Image (tube, rainbow, N blue to C red; front, side):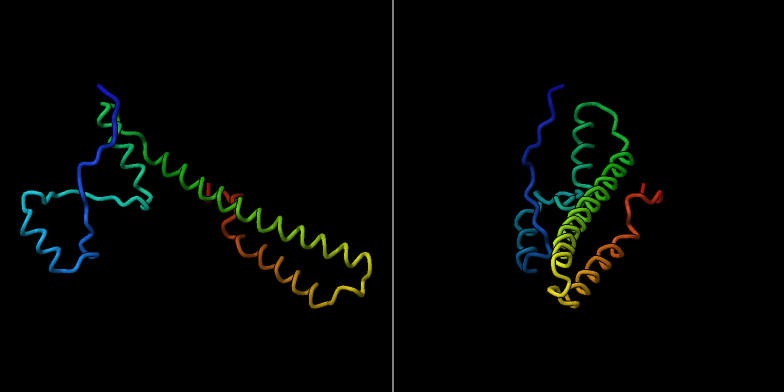
Length: 140
């Protein structure tokens, strides 16, 4: 068998994005072009899974275990969230360090409102994602 290659076979129009009369016109003018099918939009989580399923079928291979793929996607989402959280916390840590240096040099030079603001930002960042920590067993 030759290698599976995607090809352009269909033009899909989303009916709810067309004026009603245009959708009816297309149905009337091209009844033989109407095909019963399933459409998976590119921003759906199943999109790459469906392409993989078709590629495997065309190659005569068994369909892969998509539960493993879904698990990998879920783990990747957790990893991305943890990475974003690390970026936020890292930025706050640097700002806190600068504030501490300023206090160390001259305790009266830093208004208490700046200290309170930083404490509030750090507290909010720490509590915001605690329920979705990648360390919790139920997320693995």
